[in-house]
Length: 86
Image (cartoon, rainbow, N blue to C red; front, side, top):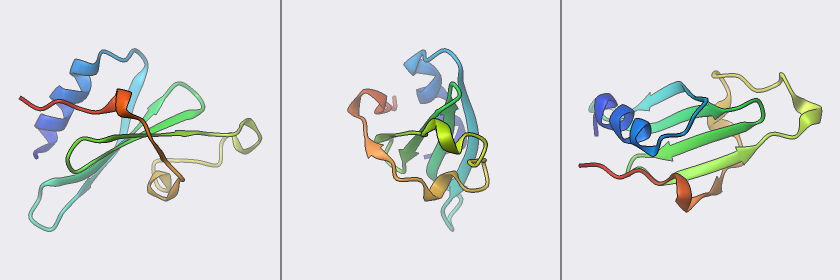
C-alpha cells in the first residue's frame, strides 16, 4: 500500500485528535507500518495490511516516548482501529 492509501483509510476512521507521527517503509517503497498519537497518552500502530494496535502510555513515563522510538512499544491488538482500503 502507498502512503496515500494509508492516509485516506486513517482519515476515514474519523478519529478526532489523531496525529500521524511516523511511516515505516519496505525496501520496495510500500508502507510497512504507520504510527500515530491519539491524545496525550495513547499511541496507535497499523501494520502493512491495516490491522490496528494500541499502546496506553503510563502517566509516570510521560514525555519519554517520541516519534523516534514508537516502533518499540508493546502494542496490543485493537480491531476497532482496523483500516478498510477501497
